[in-house]
Image (cartoon, rainbow, N blue to C red; front, side, top):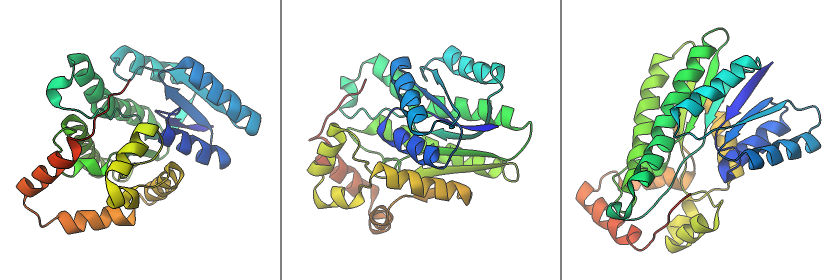
Length: 263
């Protein structure tokens, strides 16, 4: 039996992937930081889908030893992972000098290092047989440098570039897709950001369930990168001609008015 490994399984988008795949009868291997939340999620899935294979392992994605321990656990329990969905992310938004170094490390490790580390471990074990599938969640925020959201946009840009290259390297033996959604109204702070962005914020946002469905469809087709949502595609088209200096001034004006921390 093969499993789908989902990071950030207890979050809004991660949870949407979990519920969608559970409804399809997909065996699930779930991870997140909280053992209690993972246990509760696994229990609720077993109640709803009694025959569904569900395993879980709590993991701090910033910790190299814990990341390695997750894959050691999977090997020890004969959990064969055929698909990795990397959803976990940290979306701190504020002036860079207001960061602590701990928050810098948290955001860069979860958003980028963790994804690369998981991809390496996953593809190494997946080479043993069958075609692997790797889906990573980027963001339209990675298109341009974003003052006041600089570290987040930089890490999401790095994800897109790295997994686009990996898509080519893995051709013929693994599907690799990076999806680029806009805002997803899963938490009160995100909903408030969408509201502050006005009409365009509302148009570009999509429910987590829809993002999960479209992402899995893109992975099945082995698309390299996919922008999720018509209005996000339109935004990229309409802003493509603008000088970067204009974009930076506009983004700085809008995003300096919003601030949020995480974890």
